[in-house]
Length: 316
Image (cartoon, rainbow, N blue to C red):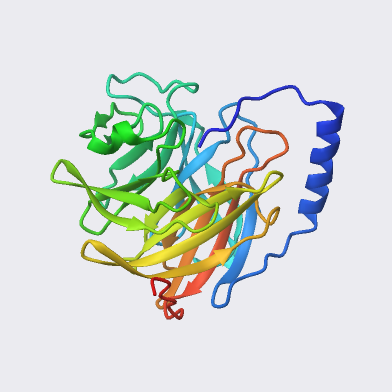
């Protein structure tokens, strides 16, 4: 989701923001849900004028390489440095390519004020898929620097709310894309999930909506489960939640809340990638969207989960 454009800040607002940042600095060590282990957080600094606003993330199977997209139609790729040189070590640094613009179907660079890229998925063949909030569409490309192909429109496109469209995108082991909107329309209405198969979109299942959280990122893990990253703005700060679901055919079961952060614990987490650092373990790597604001930050946040994490079926 793209938030409001920059505006001049009054002295009072700057003072309030300074107070918030001071509190945030005291919230360095997160509280974790039972079974979830906090690995670490790494703040990413870059002076490029297109840097920031990251809303989609993919991480390689070995946890060393990443691709991120910005909600201003940009893409960046890089390689993590991890503690001890270990694949499962915490992120200690990174090396990245310059921030490049994605291309549309005509080969024209994306417009930062129009093309709101939000969801990212990468196929087994390396093909890039990007979903956009506005205008709603999904692009596919062999490489970021080649013209994209616009995938078939879904009948649900006309139902999407402005600035709350296809926020999340995932791809399953069969190469089928799944997407869902940031908002469902009502607090009591579940999030619909659509799947693209053989050139046609279908409504395959719903995810229950709980509380004021909005859907901002999704991934299919190496365990075949559906992982959903959600975000809520409390009025002064963001808090985040990750839930996961077993997929059985066209149904979802065994809903689990993996963790729920407190306000100011992290910034605006919007992108999620799920991979396995070792047999029997799942890692969540997430990235924050700084909304191109000086008082926010771009940060990678990681959690480890044992694959045997007890399941809590909340559908009863």
